[in-house]
Length: 217
Image (cartoon, rainbow, N blue to C red; front, side):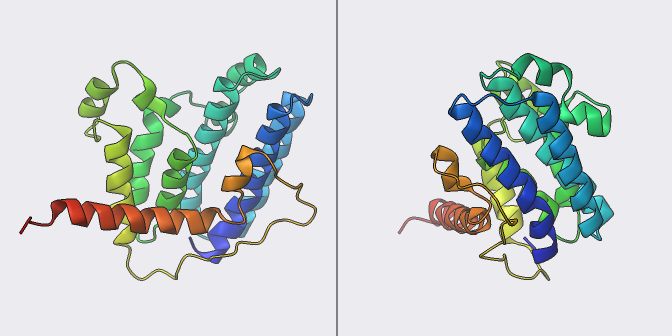
């Protein structure tokens, strides 16, 4: 992910990871305040990114991932968030289960892979959308998508690996000053190391895919 894009995405990731840690510790927090804070971060991020098309797609991925987390996780703001999703606040839609993956297709068509990396990252961090539905295989087939989330992840990793003309993934994205320490299970995906995890996952999946497809001697 380019330094400019990472600088826009990282504060949002850190905010959500810190929020999930507080929820995990049963700390009381206001969903209204949390959404307002996230909307502020999205506005600030938009001012940092020069590629408006890529950012709009990445913003949708992040909003969908955040909604999915906060609607499926048991916490005091669950019901409020379901009725006041970020997706609706930012895009006036409620179709993240399918639209996430359709917009990922759009991201794959862009010259740079920054937005597509955000989609891949959101899936690695738990977004499943239509793939957690009972009729997932049928819906995926209708939308010309891989029939499993594993297939989608494999294909997307390959698309990112084949990127051309991009700067290397930045290994140490800077955390915003004063970011809270992350010591729960969400620490493992903190924004300070998330791009490193992303590049390692892509490389590993690419290697395994090539190994499986190599002719056996």
